[in-house]
Image (cartoon, rainbow, N blue to C red; front, side, top):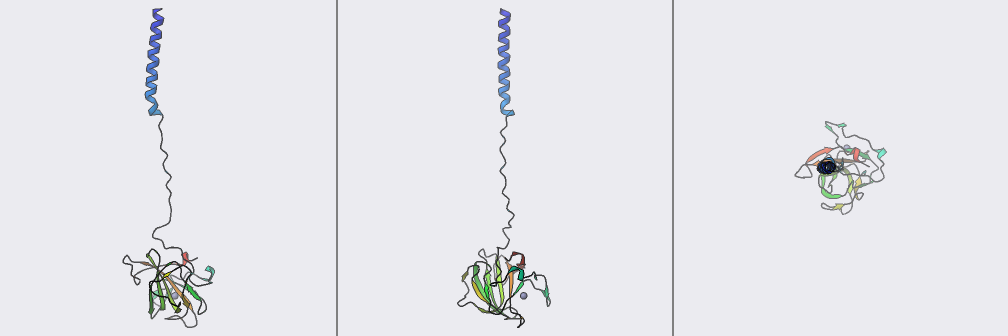
Length: 188
Ligand SMILES: [Zn+2]
């Protein structure tokens, strides 16, 4: 009987030891793996220009072509010409403030409009005239009429068109300083 009791006691001790060892192992074996949060990657470059509409009323995308890199005279064109009958409304490509109404020898009657973030400037040239009451500091909504297609400046008198450019402003945000960016892929 003593032997049996001894064996039972040993067995119980062994079992307890095994359980203790097992319990000790549990936290190591059962690892709670925190799921990694799935990164939501957006490929939108925060520096990219905003979406724009074709800034001449009634002109379809199929009617314009990419002429940004074409050479005109001794310089790159760096703009898109949008042909339309004289007097066709020129509309704001985007929301934003009219920064400058300017008359220049090449551009004729022009409008410089900043985008709402004031990172880019929209340039409209060869206008026949401005929309009535248009003034510097005025907020335009996308699609709002700002002027009319014409041939002021150096545009051929028999080819009324809007010369439209997109300018990435320098950090000091002056309407006359920046880098021309091709608006063609962005026009819808
Ligand atoms: Zn042009």
